[in-house]
Image: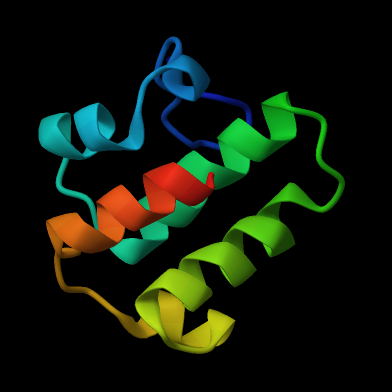
Length: 86
């Protein structure tokens, strides 16, 4: 399904684990921020995108802006760490 903003939405994405999401899709840091943001927004967290960026940056040991400069696949251990935190 395509949202109004042009983003592809996955049915039941907030309910799926990040690990299964990563297994079905090439997961880079940008995709990961979107997934965590969606999870946080569903949970009612204010500023879900900013909180997701901060959390992903913490796990990747970088600044939030640097997330968008990365284009490499994420190591499985980073995905597991983020899954525990999110």
